[in-house]
Image 1: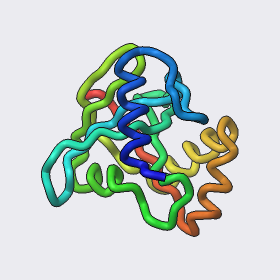
Image 2: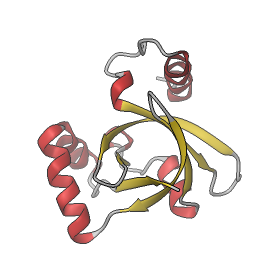
Image 3: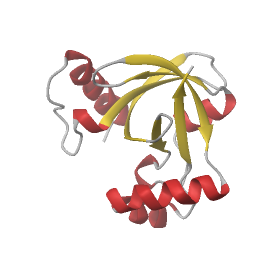
Length: 136
């Protein structure tokens, strides 16, 4: 599967405001996240599932359970300033990787609502990074 082509289709559908034409993707659960390339410094946009938090949104660097973290995660670790497109608004944000008790609490809430992330973490063989994004 060509993930770049899938992402481009999801991004197009999302921005057009209609249904997402890729199975398993739902507009109300997605944001478009734009990060700056850690090496290229070129902005890159990807669709990412999100949940809300008390302070902003939470995204999971699961890479669909792959062993390696997604490029967007490595990008925002290098430069935490991001751009977010939600279904009803867009904004610039700051990303923060959650650790320790904050991560544990967010993980418990996440897997309560989305238990498939447990399988993704097991398949990945790594702790899935959780990233909270707040508006700047």
